[in-house]
Amino acid sequence: MKQIKKNYYILGIDTSCDETSAAITCDTKVLSNVISSQVELHNKFGGVVPMIAKREHQARIEPVIEEAFKRASINVGKNITWNDIDAVAVTYGPGLAIALEVGLLKAKELAKKYDKKFIAVNHMEGHLWSAVAQNSSGNIGLDWRTIKFPVLGLLVSGGHTELALVKDFGEYQIIGETLDDAVGEAYDKVARMLGLGYPGGAVLTEFAKKGKYDSYKLPVPLQNQDTLNMSYSGLKTAVYYLVKDLEQDHEKLSKQEIYDIAASFEASAIKALTIKLELSIKKYKVKSLFVGGGVTASVKVRNEIRKTCRKFGVICHFPSLKNIHMDNGAMIAVAGYFRAIKGKSDKLTIDRNPRADLGRP
Image 1 (tube, rainbow, N blue to C red):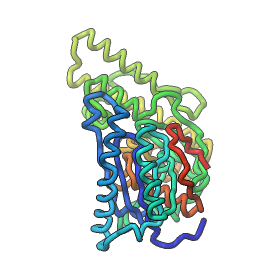
Image 2: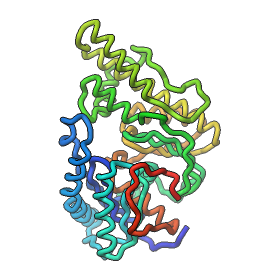
Image 3: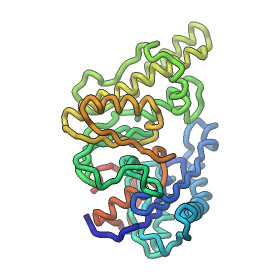
Image 4: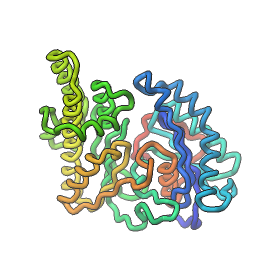
């Protein structure tokens, strides 16, 4: 580890998709985390429209950064200024190319203007370490100094589903990933089939609580294959044909049928995750698991992952702060802190990378 000063302040920026976010952290303590969502703008299109996302990021990024400084100052009871900031961390990828570009350009501009260290962060690295983000007092969230490597990382978001062997901060080996749809993407697509709107994953999760998880027999992708890779397109297609068959019988799905389909889908989706999680724990003999990504908002997802970990005596760590599971600047700043203590920084010439790999050194 590189010796850096105590109370290391970072401005973290994320514009990877349709949330404009900026945060101020002190070491791993989150002093502010401002998220401006564009969901309502994209909702009527049934998905994110790239040009709208870019335009909104450009309009919102400066006021969001200003608000991050304001909230951080209120939180710590003193005026936080650029004199306090040691580095600017920003998502360079993966994500939506023209959205990433907005945050990256702004971060470069600010790092140059104020002569601050510039740190480019992989978005999935941010999700991985979101469980380590602490509140401003440091009494909620995991103390990173207690981590004993290697650990396992399970990343479940709208765009990615990955299993990673974490050998140290910044040293990652992808050991399993989705071959097609990410689990969060499958949630949203199934929600759309059921008429739950966009993004509908969170709504589907709520509806599933009112359904029976064994109402419909749906496939569990790759459950009998000795691979750590995952797949969700087949499950999504099975739901599509189930809905079509039921609609042929009586034109419109009943409320209870929607609840039961949501529950049956979620049961299969989670089982597919936990089967691969169990295989990876057996293979790599890890003692700790870090879980990150928007899908962790589901109580059932968290409970089933915990249940799997308990079978093997593995300690499971989830994000513990409000809004830290979704795309946000705080997780980028925390991941940036770990890059800083490993002696990592980046040149202002680094470009966006929509398909960035977590294994980047």
